[in-house]
Image (tube, rainbow, N blue to C red; front, side, top):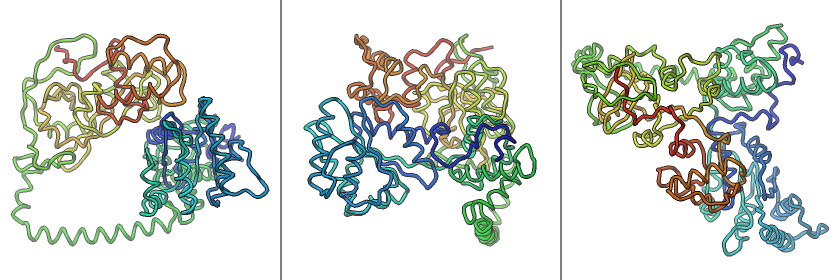
Amino acid sequence: MYAAHFGLREPPFAITPDPAYVYLSRHHREALAHLLYGTGENGGFVQLTGEVGTGKTTLVRTLLEQRLENVDIALCLNPRLTVVELLATVCDELGVAYPREYPTLKPLLDALNAHLLRTHATGRRTVLIIDEAQNLSREVLEQVRLLTNLETAKHKLLRIILVGQPELRQLLARPDLRQLAQRITARYHLPPLEPRETAAYIRYRLQVAGGREELFSDGALRAVHQRSGGIPRLINIICDRALLGAYGQNARRVDAGLVCQAAREALQGGPGSPAAHRGWRALGIGLAGLAMIGAVWWLAANTDLLSRSTEFIAGGPAAIIPVQHVNPAGPPVSPTTPATPAAPTAKVPAPPAPPTATPDLRTLLRQAAGDNANDRLLAVWGIAQPPPGRAPFCEQVKAHGLRCLAGRGDWDALRRFDRPTVLRLTQPGGVPTPTLLRALAGDQATLEVAGQAVTVPLAQLAPLWTGHYLLLWRPQVDQRVIGPGNTGEAVLWLRRRLALATGQPVPEPLSATFDATLAEQLRAFQRERGLRPDGLAGERTLVLLSNLAPPPGTPVLGQPLQEP
């Protein structure tokens, strides 16, 4: 109805799991990597859980769209079955012949086992995917466990992936199902989208449908996330209703008011409904009242401490640094720490020259409240101006062949990645301040804060760092995850890099297929580099592999800064 009004080829927010509209957030990419692992040579038993509407079934459909060579998949979408019905469904999906008039357990198992042995002998793998697995009965789950006993001396004949709501985790935690739970080799829980991911998700679906990415205002995007809780299905429902409301009002753009109205009409008791908001408001008023009572009691009991708090406000000796990441007993930040000169280099742009005496880091953080650390990170990569547009930062950098890597880690992880990094530091009072980490040498870190280069000991910086980081890297292959079922140039690149990592000659001829031997080599590389040895070359692994032979001009943390 509204598609032509907004110049759309089709409605962009249908709730059907259309792979063409799949937006892979960081968590969705990790979930898909677990599903790919489940189809691999050593896949075994995988469990994927997530709240209703977070995109689990869409990921399953995306998996089916992958070009998985030598893989047969049996998909069970209705788990409310008896044991015999489940086995009959698996046989039907795989094209296995069995007595259909009066099927019983033994003929079904015999027919399935014979089929699995034949396909294994031809080099094929068989995967059973059960969606909505939280609805499986105790008896069916026990039969699923017994299916994992179908094996040869070295390989499982049937790989199993259970996909379900969080209740599945509770179900498998029951003592009588511990034998099944112990056989699960990989687990992943899919969380809702974060605010920036929600905005990127909406813009992406609009783009796929041929519409304008700015069709929703910034306020509307924030309102969608607030009312949906970041759950993709609710995002779709709210956005679809909001576009319909804008069409009814002959508006050319969706604002926050239309989103709030759409949420009230569409959710009816969900996260964005009036009843839900009244409940949260009542809870908030109650908590605020308790907080006021506590504050009055504290002030009465701590008048002497209150008199000393003015020194903290003025930045005096009584200043308290909130500890977010390490032992609260960590030392405070030194007010003056001289910068360490370093050898010159001409490969990367130089940051501002370090001053002769370092100002108070806490003062600089307060002054840097309006500083854009992301722009400084782009400048390190030789990008003078931020890319135009309203897309999230990590979407914008793709125009320059870069990708974001965000997460939470420690100094050793940053040394391994060896890229200039935006750290989330906390000012006194808990205000987060993104700050560019420009160099990391020994126990010293050089930051760019408020236009100045500041070198501080890690021991004094650690209490300010929450552990969150964001860095940029330039991929050398198009594939985001290299793992079982993949073939082609990305696999050849992976083989060459792993040979380089071990100092071994590149084996010839190179196989373009990801096999069990390559997976084990990849796990060895991951263990040596402190990564989780999952046998999948995801973003973190790809960064470390790229570091073995980085392109010329790649900025690094370990490289000394250029003197003026």
